Length: 606
Image (tube, rainbow, N blue to C red; front, side, top):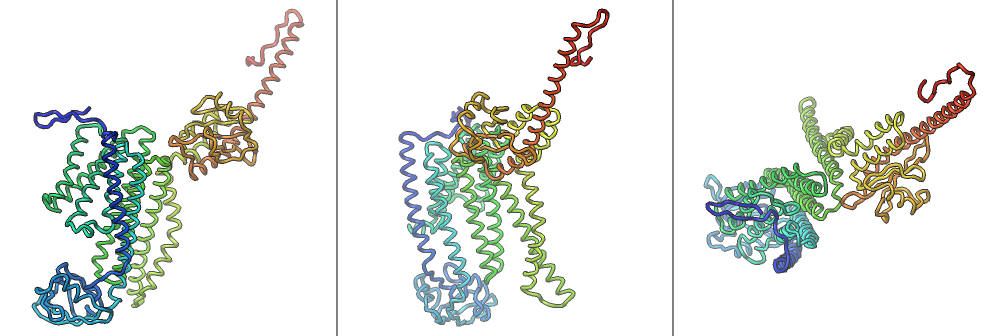
């Protein structure tokens, strides 16, 4: 138990979040089922709304207006721009009818006209001039916006489906506190990821309330991630501050300038706590779980930052094709952020291929750096080509600069790929480099001085440590030379039950003891034996990178064992000859002439 002192009271709190059992489990299941049902309805309704024809109203005429329709926010259409309409103009009348006399329904009726219809807008600009502009409804005014809207509908639908799938998968482990909290958080988020519930229920701020509840459950789950252990009174204080967030949103306490810094601070504190706990964890499944969780959160944060930057850039362009491209990039990055965060937490809590984290992180880092590098090379190349052409050729190259910059970036990206891939391997896959490069060097030295047994012990220890094998053994001929994680007798009994010479090499998924069989062979010496490996601690088989590293080490290991074996046989023959020679000399010494000393022992170095 943990003691938390508040004023004169001492509160005793558990060290872990409580598991769900009995009545609590039934209540949770009912709430989760109701939330999932609501989320399914909202997702279907939102998807239908997203892909049916949308009445753009003001945008049909190349304008964007405030919710009341009293002020022009943006001018997006070419006809409206040529008419002299500017952002900030005040709308006085539509078709001669004063705005103060029009409610929302009347405005909508006046704006919803067929293609080619003309509308008269009376506006007052910043200088106080009042003018009437006649604008034509045209599909060209909404063509780019329609692309963005469809992409947004697709993004929201995929996000909702991802949340629903994650909530359903985690519900299977609902007795554990962290999966239960995240299952309910994802289900709640699915109910707001698409068309807001407020549009269906006509309840103001309902989406904000649901979002605050979802985020609070997520943060509490992360505070106890991955096993529900809290560990200190300070952590319970953090959870208490998290639980204050939804009431603050529901009761409208403070404003966005207070609530947002508050919740961002809570997020930062929770992540720092996870990082500190990760550093204190020993190697094992739990450490891999936290690593996967961190990877998902870090990758999602990267995509969120990119999404925000693209959105701000799109707002700065105002309209046109560049606006659609940047807005589309923002939506795609936002979707990738959702998938990254949900995927990382899901893999962690389901304990699925936990030991692939280093490989996935390394590749993701490499692809991320390559993507940013290509974008930077393209942007810098395009600007450089434009500047050079304007300075020395006095010409505008237009789209040609983009094509040349893309070609330049494509040429430079190849050497960049090799450098970045090497960096990612050295940074995130050190254990595989130790296996593929370090082990051949070690056995190369041992083959001149060590025995076959010593080489085999080195191989099983290195393989087990660097690919996280639960057990390993080296077989030479029909005997077990070295083992790791099980006794030689157990490995020998396993070997007696099968004939590896006729069984296929590689992965034998039906074998629970040694599902990975790697032949130790080289062109120079042929096949000298086998390296057999058990599964990883999470029960999974090794990925492509691990198998590649093992394969690269197999040849040098086979040569080392063959050379050490030949040296042992040669040394054995030499020793046998020496012993026979000693026996012969001793036999002759028994018939030696009196007064003559017997010959010294060769084996003793005499």
